[in-house]
Amino acid sequence: MKKQIFAIGGAGLSWQPDKLLLEKYFLKLTGQACPKLCFVPTASGDSDFYTRRFYDAALHLNCSPSHLSLFNAPSEDLESIILNQDAIYVGGGNTRNMLVLWREWKLDEIMRKAWEKGIVLGGVSAGSICWFEEGVTDSIPDRLTRLKCLGFLSGSNCPHYDSEAARRPTYHRLILNEEIASGLATEDGVGLHFIDTKLHQVVSSRPSAKAYSVGVSGNQIAENKIDCHFLEE
Image (cartoon, rainbow, N blue to C red):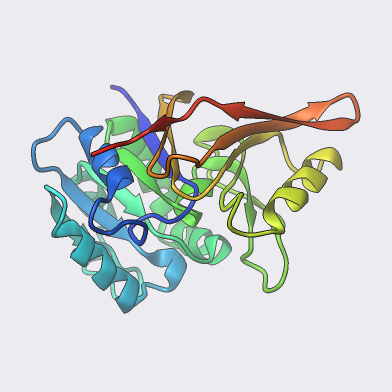
């Protein structure tokens, strides 16, 4: 069974809401004509506004939408809900809080089962870094820090690489100081498509947006652009 993850660096759902190029790409990965898509907004505290925005976006997508709230769970049997989907889209917000709740509800284990079953996993910001071993997060107020994540994908991930001024220098510092593993950085509007645990393709909804592999060469940061395919209508 092919395992797939689509990690978006930022601007998912809100960027070009009339086009939703990244979300359309994500849904195509399911191979279904009208896939069952579940939105998981835990990182935003199950924000009603964010959930409404998801359903508004779903009107422009060929899918059967639903959402899973942990603050108002529809059932204690979350596994049946998740494993009945074709794709899971995780929203942005506080990744640290999200992972604490997921582990309490054993949703981390359920997500791994979904991934291994071939359900396509993805999301934006928190919904990007959560799949990696580590990520750069702003979960602590006024600070960017390293966060241990689920580890489905190796290495680290840093979203919002162009839209938040502190992201790039902080990621460089953490890598140089060996506080976080080398990894992948994404500007807003960029999606990383993994098949199994290998990066298969990088796509973008913005012509100028980029992704980078970031590591160390000698005692200096080595930052290399990754070829990025611009998604056009």
